[in-house]
Length: 403
Image (tube, rainbow, N blue to C red):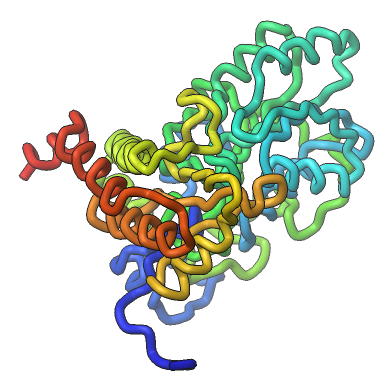
């Protein structure tokens, strides 16, 4: 009946926000305190050093803002650029589109390289554009590492090689919102100058922290950047962070949650975290193949390990699958956005997740598709994912051996 209680828990399988482990929820359940007290740096100072481990950087400088990933986007650009600066950006999904629009609102001149949705950034086209920029007017290259809207992961290392091959001084800006702490990300090794993420995905927290990690080369750019900034000014944080404080009131419960989230990641081991995401994503892809459906990602080289965007057959609407999953099975799936609206639904498989949790989402998606008339064989996706998990080399076997 209308308004009746829905028993059981909601199955959250959007690609962010993600499931929050109970121990992180408990860590955030903390009384308020004086964020100017002499004890406060005991919490904050280790956070900066441990976040550098997640970004895999030694010299990068970390800034934590009370914001979403969009705030970190804004901070990355306004602190290092001036109105009129030329930027080169690949657009291949809703989030690369939004970042480009944000840059334009701040007066940046963005040269857009359109790529087919379902593919990612093209290192070859980026190198070509930079080689043609003889006067080095392009100041930065903007790349979304993992495009959540289409389930595509770009090769950031290859983009850096393209910049270097062109012998171009442009900075490399990377959106790692749905990759960092879930997919291998190597800031120093890949020569990333400015990387950003948000708290609500691989870090297994509620939304509310926008995190930027800035290379020393990018920090040098802040001295001459004239884009308007106030709340997101790196300089204010650079003055207060070294002593363990913030220029304004921080999001205290989220900082306690971040401390515990980092503990969780390090206890599992970052390499194991990345392997687990690859393992779970591969099981999902096995299910999609067994359903006779296709991913939005056009080629395996683009496959994301944090979200699978699953195309529905012609004549069907992905929104109907999502609506049925939520109303009938209490399962939250991700929607198609912008150019792919209605053409797909998304299963997010990132954060605090194991095989049985994911099998529940696959089962719910399968039932929902059948309910709206999409002809998939009952149990086909579940069976394929189970067989993958049973037979896969790697994480499953290592886990059993450890026990």
